[in-house]
Image 1 (cartoon, rainbow, N blue to C red):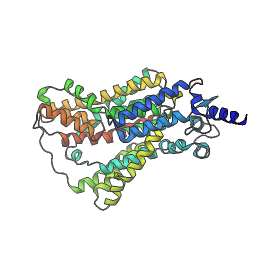
Image 2: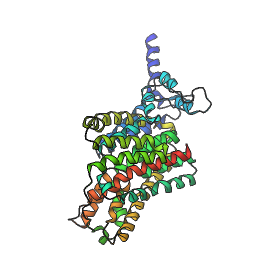
Image 3: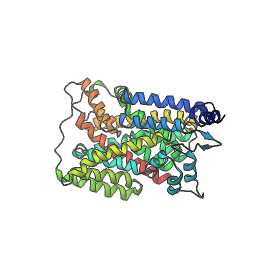
Image 4: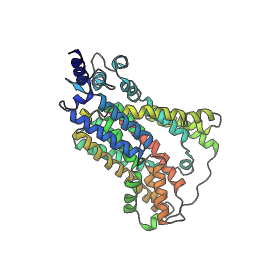
Length: 408
């Protein structure tokens, strides 16, 4: 009799029983979604460094999280109800990381790095150390293309408002148009943490699909003549310029928009370590070891927010559609800016480099190069496209800082 009771208890405590409870089918759907994301990350190599971690975090949270009367099971890795209490203004546990540490699971603790803005900022530190701002410095007008490519952010924002999202949520959805995953995660964790899962997955999915999304728009909005334009080599940038640049940008941008300090500050510090010539060890560490460690934690903890009960909603579908529109409009904005420069310079600027104004470095620049070379095999646009590309990184951070200042 004791053996039968023990077996019955084991069965009741297992996750399999919960699949047949009310809403349990949603967990099965999310497990299928996580397997699809794993396939895209591993087989198709869609942003695998982050997508594989996000997908496995999604798998873990939907295997371990089952709800009874609105609360997670005691052995859950992630507890949404703890984070609801964390965000409840005036509540006993409002912004209490101690309560999370004392009662949370593994993924709750890892998610603290997302909620506090630590992981995205450290990612920007690594991006800064890996980025050469020389192409931007040699042709400062590329800043205008990076700014033009933020058009999708604000168009998607107004679209989200029209679909019933509040200001904070609309701002978080719009930032997908910047094609910058860490920025999207940073802004969403501050303004609309309940939407972090779908926004992060949408942002990284569309970044991975750049080679499929951008070329049709590039061909639609440019003529064969424009695509064949062969740009002249830009001037050589001095070492002094490269050292002064991150210092000046940090001073000007942070004084103008203090809310950009975590992202812009880390981006420029990483770049300064790269360029100053006396901190090679630090630059190497943030480019490699630190970047890899943070990527592990960021991917898994973001995946943890894709709890079935909150992910499988109509709002998620709206976010996916709005994210795609945001990304497309950002590409269009960059291309239109490139066409203006083509006209103003008398045909010396290839408009294709404008599409690289989204901040997916260096993938967007490579797409510009590929499309340009198809039109003119002797064309080499990569280094020219890197100017708007790195400008887009700064532009997306500034856009996020502006939205954070307005809505926080």
